[in-house]
Length: 269
Image (cartoon, rainbow, N blue to C red; front, side, top):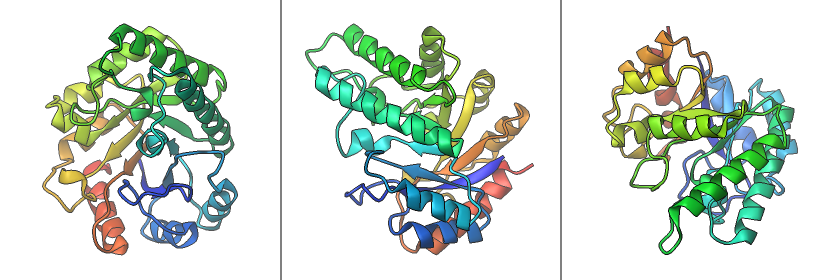
């Protein structure tokens, strides 16, 4: 397995986000010097993200960009595939397609968490599901060279596709080779999943993993034990990225260093 750390795109305005905030060069340098192989990039609008600078820094510090994370497309701008408003759905798909094109250049995946949408009061859930599936399909089919990764999200944050089993069911219904799965450890814990069982059922679909510690702290700064998760991933032969996605607290240097130490211990063979 390879390890990456989340860095926040320069077009995102808010600070209550899960990643390192600041200029790309010093952040990429920090991540590289601690031994990570990649930087996962959290974006809001791929038409505004300075990807030329991302590319420059990635090459300078010999880092890969394994995933373009779309969390703030929904988080900051409120866009989703499942929104009842056609214009919102259209813009969500437009941005996802652009992210897919950029991801192809970086040999990366694109994730879809909150971007898939949620059930809304007064809207038939079957319509939300239909619109969400249409968004996935249109986005995925726009670039078959890039995998679009569905991320199940716990009930405290979402109300639609909460567990690994539900995520896999959704993916199989779409029956499109480049729509695949990512897992996020904290969502699995909150949903009280059997970690080993969930990992094993994901074997043929899993392309990326997120972790953070309890209370969404950087890895090693809470009370989570990742050993079972790491053992299960190694057992299925997972060789992709494990990426820290956390609300940063205190000194970035400590966060990045401590996270890497725990990741090596729990996920390294």
